Length: 193
Image 1 (cartoon, one colour):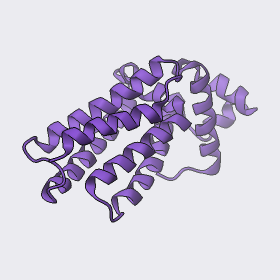
Image 2 (spheres, rainbow, N blue to C red; image 1 turned 90 degrees about the horizontal axis):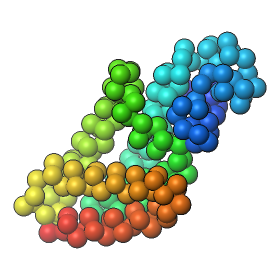
Image 3 (cartoon, helix red, strand yellow; image 1 turned 90 degrees about the vertical axis):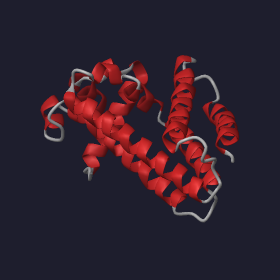
Image 4 (cartoon, rainbow, N blue to C red; image 1 turned 180 degrees about the horizontal axis):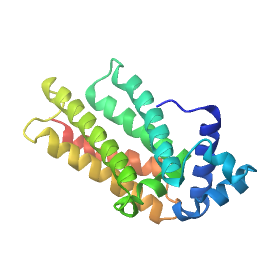
C-alpha cells in the first residue's frame, strides 16, 4: 500500500497519541489538535479513525516485511535467520511501543470487521511465513522434523506474544531486547535437531 507524505505524517501522529494514552486517545479531534489541522483537513486524507488505525497497521507491516525480506534473502542458516528476525522485530517494537497498544487491542476490533480482517490477515501471513521458514530449515536438516512446522510456529508465535505482553504489562520498563534474546535461546534449543 502506498501512502502520501501527509498520510504518513498522520499515521505517525496517530501512533504518538496512542502511545501517550492508548487507542481510546486517538480521536479525530485530538489528532487535529496535535497536528494543528482542522478536522475537515484530516478527513481529506482518511475517512475516519478506523481507516487511520488500518493505515497504521499496514504501514508498519510493510516496514517489517521489507526488512525481514532482506534477512530471508541472506546466505545464513535458517536458525540464524530466525535469530536476526527476532532481533529486528523486538528492536522495531521497542522503537514503536504504540503498535503494541494497537495490536493488543484486537479484542476491541472484534466488532469492527475492517480492523479485525486486517489483524487476522497480518497474523495469517506472519504464521505462514514462519511455517515456510521452519519447513526450509527442516528440509536442510537444520531444524528438527519430529515436530510439525505448524506446532513449532505456534510455540514461536506464542513465545513472542507472551514476551511482548509481559513488556507491555511492565509499563514498557523491562528490557525487551534482552527478553527477546532469552526467548530465542530457548526456541533455538527447541528447534535444533
